Amino acid sequence: MRRKLVAGNWKMNGTSAALDQVEKLKSDHTNPSIDIVLCPPATLLHKMMHSIGNAPIFAGGQDCHADVSGAHTGDVSAEMLADCGASYVIVGHSERRTDHRETNDQVRIKTKAAWRANLKAIVCIGETLEQREAANTLDIIVGQLAGSIPDNATGENLVVAYEPVWAIGTGKVPGLDDIGEVHDLIRTRLERRFGSGVGRSVRLLYGGSVKASNAGDIFDVSNVDGALVGGASLKADDFSPIINALQ
Ligand code: PEP
Image 1 (cartoon, rainbow, N blue to C red):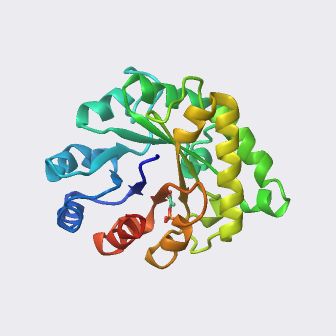
Image 2 (cartoon, rainbow, N blue to C red; image 1 turned 60 degrees about the vertical axis):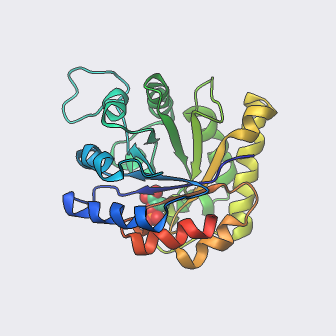
């Protein structure tokens, strides 16, 4: 039985004042039956851990460098995230793949770095609009999945987020059948590569314009174990109903 998960990606948003949202989430979800993960900017991680205290909420990074330490100005290692109290890290988000030209190879190496630091990696994959319109979605997903995930994946250390690039921050969402088709494909490929036990235990999230009004329908789709939420995770009043839709 896979434990459901909702992760909020704050992206490059939030200063200390945003931690009020953590206080609100804590009072909204004192005993959640699912995993709740907040991924703030790295600058907020340490303070966020203080805000979370003993509450049943996990924190995560939004990216990590492949190395433990060294001459990489501006970067943050998986070990540094773990040292701040993170338990998860997002790798291969489409904004990293686009803005920083991250390739599947780099995402795979970062995922290994996350595991080295005992972080759970949320590996993002997803097609662009151009690729969808050219009917290449499934091929793209298969290629990204094979290239971005190292050997030794388990249900404990890996979460896969399917995030169509064209659905991120646009208010557009694929049809429920389309989401189901991709999630079923990801599940089948994970089972084929890692064996059915591991393949069935990895959690699969959908991401891209999830909000309170569509979350329930998306969570009913087969092989959707939760969501990676961007914009709607910034305010507890928007994020809490999404969490409630999954419980
Ligand atoms: C994201 O950035 O991972 C995301 C899903 O964003 P949004 O929910 O705003 O579409």
